[in-house]
Image 1 (tube, rainbow, N blue to C red):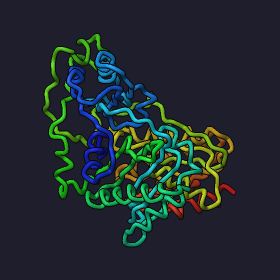
Image 2: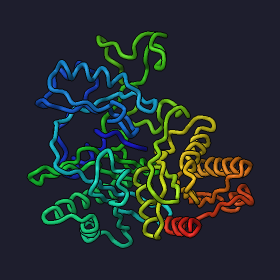
Image 3: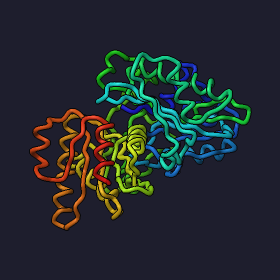
Image 4: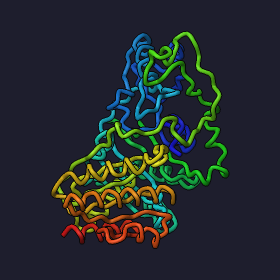
Amino acid sequence: MDLLEYQAKSLFRQMAIPILPSQRIDHPADLKGLKIPYPVVLKSQVRAGGRGRAGGIKFVENTIDAVAAAQTIFNLPIEDEYPQVLLAEAKYNADQELYLAVLLDPVARRPVLLGSRQGGMDVEGSIDLMQQVPVDQEFSPFYARRLTLKMGLQGDLIQSVSTIVEKMYRLFVEKDLDLVEINPLGISPSGELMALDGKVTANDDALGRHPDLATLSGKRQSSEIVGDRRNPSAGGDRRNSNSKVQHSQPEFDPKPQSPISNSESLQLVELDGNIGILCNGVGLTMATLDAVAHQGGKPANFVNMGSLDRYDGVNALRDRTELGLELVAQDKTVKVILINILGSASKSDEITAAVAGYLERKARANRHLQVVLRLVEIDTDAVKKRLGQLPVQLARTLDEASAKAVSSAK
């Protein structure tokens, strides 16, 4: 379950991770009582990535512009999700932006620290700068310091960034989380650190031990609207500037309100190798690319499918997996596709079916591709039976998967 940015930052505040002055905005009219001095940035609070590119983040200089911008953002769907809340935040001038994350490798059953000197919107295009440090023993400040050194940080930044990583790890452990991410961690010209954006993924199975996660911000606004979201003329505009939306649903809904459609684009990031990569989640994608490089291989491209919880419609995950495979395989230099996806047993079954169907079609078209498949919670015998004689190698760990992919690509 992915938390929204303002919810993640509430947890950051509890851990003394530095964040900017901010204010939750439930309605454009709330900006008339804004307590943060201008200029400010308004951010759409949705779980999808790419908010900036989609128009969900806007800088404003005064109340009039802020209200107008808020009305636009509230009516802007990002991957079929409309924001129920906006975050108004003070503007920050960063001299440098880093990427930091702590994520769980469920197969190896150990946390991994990730860090890059290139953060922000272009982090996925700077794979060569991504560093990782597995936490294979009891955590100590040594792990955080090791990450900062691998990132190439120097001087006072080694200690200050290490301290942030330690706090992220403590939050990760105390709340039984699957992911804690800061992207970007801004660094001012004076060396001040600030978590400018954050993502937290809670473990659904651990929510019973952490009721505060389910009540972090009380109740959220319902998604009930007048008319059809895709056709405002069917019943009027989604929001009426003179009325408030009622609070009636729990703050955290683990399932998005609308299914993902194949008309929505998956982003292909092109590199210069011969291994195509298909993953779910930024942290896992970065770790996979790094693992391939560590084995001496070169990725040709990659597609990040994002959270699997978004794919709830009939055959939605299967269709999107096949679309992702088509994207990474369109480059004729790709010799092998490495699929590294973490999800439930039912999701793994859908992905297996997608891989089998895709390879069968490609074989009929005389395009023969090698695939290395790493999934969790699978019946290995059943998967092997489903795949039959198709050119698919199964892998249990990321290291095994990357080694097989690199070997097949030679």
